Image (cartoon, rainbow, N blue to C red; front, side, top):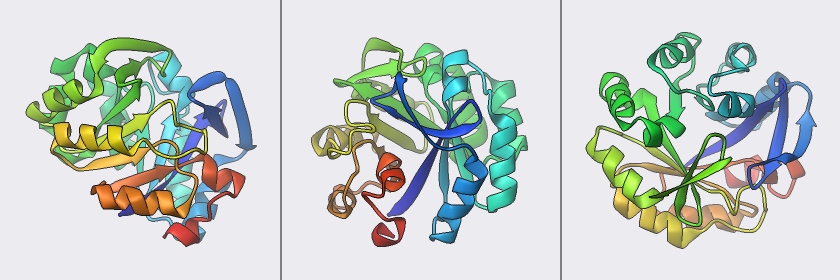
Length: 233
């Protein structure tokens, strides 16, 4: 299973939010490039980057920082946050991003998401973030009335090759992942799924592996020291 450290970008800094709340933000490092190099040195093979400013603005804001991370770390990265049209996808991929994560657009403009999946294949990941089973969008500031499982089924039919599933209620809480919701999601998606949200201990990673998840994104636990990257690797 792929272990993927998360680097969340806000105002050019490496931060973590609590349950996606922009008012509950902790700055862990002023230099995200330094953080990326640290994860590489500890054995990371892939990084998950989120442009939190971009998610709210509806377009990437921290792309220059992303480019610096890619160049300095030499690691492949996936990027999410505010990627909502074809030109921005092209810009991100041209900047050296390995995979682009589509979130809001998968719900708001399913036709565009399908076109991007058909065109770019494995380089597009559909990120579905759920609050109480319902899809949340616009940087998690709005909750829709569409279930995460329904959207997963629909996007799989429309060419999605991989998903990231995040349970918002667990994100940044250091409790534990929502295994049951993840299993339901995986059953609906029938494609590789990367789990995100709530990981705090090595046994959480072991249990996620048992579900058949392709990978796990770990954020806060690595920054607080609750979990050591080398331990789970």
